[in-house]
Length: 485
Image 1 (cartoon, helix red, strand yellow):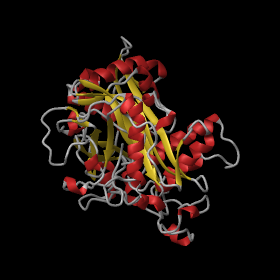
Image 2 (cartoon, rainbow, N blue to C red; image 1 turned 90 degrees about the vertical axis):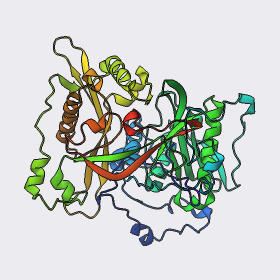
Image 3 (cartoon, rainbow, N blue to C red; image 1 turned 45 degrees about the horizontal axis):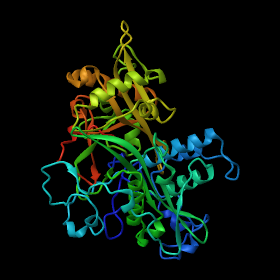
């Protein structure tokens, strides 16, 4: 449930993202709003229609949109176009800059969160456990929370290409700062958890929130919970306090399915993180990044020296490396499951989930395995995902291709840091060979074992992890084994 702020109460209308904040490549095109004569935020809701929506609010993946959008908005989309749109939705939501807002306030300042089952900002947590007990079905509110007569709740059918396109456009035009994008149709997804708000008068979709189920191991206590994402409210309606009611409504719907905990991330400090991670960046194409003002040339290095500093071998170095195949799912499941057990908080994946999240998808997920030449055993696994970002007003470049480290499992369960460094160096090579310009990660899991050795640089953005209705003693980032797209 990536959340940040909402007018007067730190509930954000857009999730946090995994993009670097120290980049000049991500420009916000707010001047276009003024030029197109679009209505101001104070104009009536009835004026929000297809012609009046804000255009291109920032850091959006123009290339992904062009690939995903059908040639004619009137023509029905094929299954291939629908899948492309879902993939592009993932890329777009991941392509916005994270904002570090780490200042901690008094609990009295969190008007909404002070009413929710979350730890207080000043609370010292000495024991893990749920905050409120599960409720019997009969005690859970059976009807949706009331909206004003201008709005109505809807269940968005993402198998309907027109409704999917509506969600895509809402998110594309109204996500501003944060991300944490995940697929809407992961194993166990439910239509009732794709919750939207429409304007009654013109049927325009103006708000959305979604949830997917997952199993999370919290210090050997396995919880069935949901990851909540895509919390988005149209910019013109931020003052209508829709974000808190969206959270309450998705909570109600999740409760009706017998689930009472959630996990979410945010760039903002809310009550109360289980840990805070930091973004790390590694140049793959330093000349392009400097030309795009994504990074700057060190005063101690020439351009030639910088290129030499980040130079990588032409091909992966670990013998037996190849692209992951569907037939590798059982082996990757076994290897990754064993590796994640060493972390205090980590997901428990089924083979179906491994297949969904980690089998390569063109332009989205890149996964690799190391196969022993003699035994044919899968000894290592690593993956990353794509995050292209539009470059504004640059005469040479229009896009930065960023790779983000996803899940991995080195031979020997990471006991030997040199093995982890070896497969991560190969991950950099694989990304560079696929025309990525920068490789990004967080400092969680065992990532600190290779950051310095492989010339990563610390970013200026943080990502906070939260549990809803669950107290968890604080973690160091390296105790966390959970990645959220």
